[in-house]
Amino acid sequence: MGRSRLLSKVNKNILFYSGLIIVLIFVALAIFAPYISTHDPSFINFDSVFLAPSADHYFGTDDLGRDVFSRIVYGSRISLFVGFVAVGISISIGLLLGLVAGYFGGFVDLIIMRFVDIMLCFPSFFLILAVIAFLNPSIFNVMAIIGLTGWMGVTRLVRAEVLSVKTRDFIVSAKVQGIPSWLILSKHILPNVLTPIFVTATLGVAGAILTESSLSFLGLGVQPPTPSWGNILTAGKDNIMFAWWLSFFPGIAIFITVLGYNLLGEGLRDILDPKQ
Amino acid sequence: MLNYIARRLAGMVPLLIGITIICFAVIHLAPGDPAQFLSSMNPKFSESAHEKFVKLYGLDKPLHVRYIDWVKRVAVLDFGESFAPDGKTVMEKINERMPVTIYLNVAGMVLIFFIALPLGVLSAYRQNSIFDKSVTVFVFVGFAVPTFWLALMCMYYFGVVKGWLPISGLKSYNYDQLTTLGKMWDIVHHAFLPIVLSVFGGLAGLSRFARNSMLEVLGEEYVTSARARGLSETRVVFKHALKNALLPVVTILGLSIPGLIGGSVIFESIFSIPGMGQLFYQSVMARDYPVVMGVLVLGAILTLIGNLVADISYGLVDPRIRYGKK
Image (cartoon, rainbow over all chains, first blue to last red; front, side):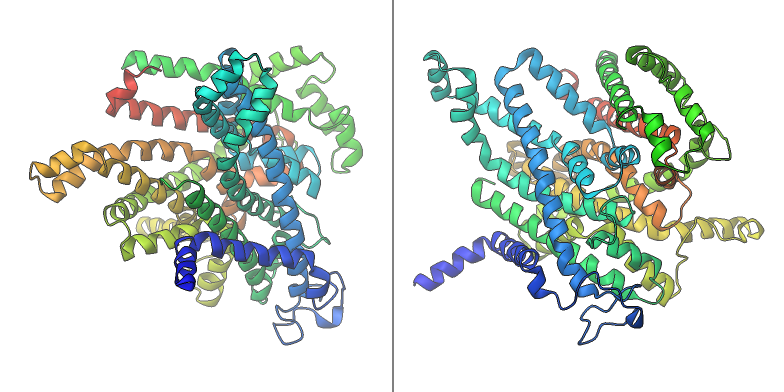
């Protein structure tokens, strides 16, 4: 009885659980990278250049004889780090602007939402590349830029939530009692808009990981020798004629990770919002 | 209707101003005096380029004067000269590259629309069927797969292993000797992989959206009433439901333009296609700032126009939008 109920619960939230498992595996990979990797990820060995996958090198070796499996394991740290920091930035900005726009309305709202519209006009990848052209490509710039160009959706979402929460009785009564705006915002409104933010944040991590890997792939993101999935793929592209493993495995790693966060996000949405 | 279009156009003005301000701000991102900073950081940045940069952006003048001067030039699409040794103007370079990117993106968008729509509509109509579930799986895969990686894999498999498709460029080197038919085939042949891959990238989002839009419409009362009147299912679905489900899809297609243009950077550099995306990438790598700014401004303006067209066509077919409160 108990078991079948548990099973049906898992089955119902299959998206959430499969996403959670994938995400946890990659988090573990990032944390325990030194124990999981089989070789030193930056050890250059010209005697073992372009070795095909084998029992010693699970995913083969690259153009400098480095172990691809170990580099991918360490690369998961970069992806995780970039994903979380970038999303942290975009959620903070989006939350702040959305709360202010939705709560105060009027002119402030108009200005903020116009700003959102303007930012949405830019092909975000173009904007990111243009900014990187003026700054220098580094992991910190990449995180900051991905975060700074990704807050618009959050702002719209938060604003819409605030607009609907604002008219409820408990907020009206708080206003009547003369509670200051910032207290109403942080104590009464914020907790009510957080739930949908979780979903957006989870999906955002997926997007940030994809963007980081594309940037690193183009040579404009995380710079070698720091291993990132994107810059391993750059070497893969240059040697695609004879070393398929160099392209294949990092791509699979990106795919599974992004899939994991997407599944988790969609699963969360189903759980948090039963009406859909 | 004219009133509606006029309102839309007026709404664009603040957006245009905002776009120029942001682009202008990007130029000034480099810490300290940008020209000084660049010349010290980048050995490729020659003395003459330094002077060009100072002159082009009037770095010796106050900020607001600089901005207004810059906007005046941008208004007539004068982005100055490229830093590259060929000494062409930015607009010359962009004009050379623009048609290819537009051709690829329009072809991609048309295909995305005509594939995603039936996928979405059918999976909404047969909700929870095996078809619906496989489309959902496909959507998840489509969202998660890095398209540049997929491009690499396809290039390797179809180009290197099988040798069916050319892996780079837009034309064969013997293009000029081909017959007209041969030329057409050659172009299609070369564009096949890039277009298929960009379609794949856009398909997931749009088909999901079409599905949700159709699901919503199928639940409306007028659909139930059409069924109750005994209309055939084909009539209900195609005549009554689809028409209304289509509208939001068109808007989303308009909104997906920036994504497609952004994606062209990756596809064009992977497949060596001489379009705007490749030009942009090369300019970023070479720090050819006038070109970077030109492409950025034009990309944003193209997006704006795309949204406007979507808005207007939405207004054309749906009077609720035209006479709506806003």
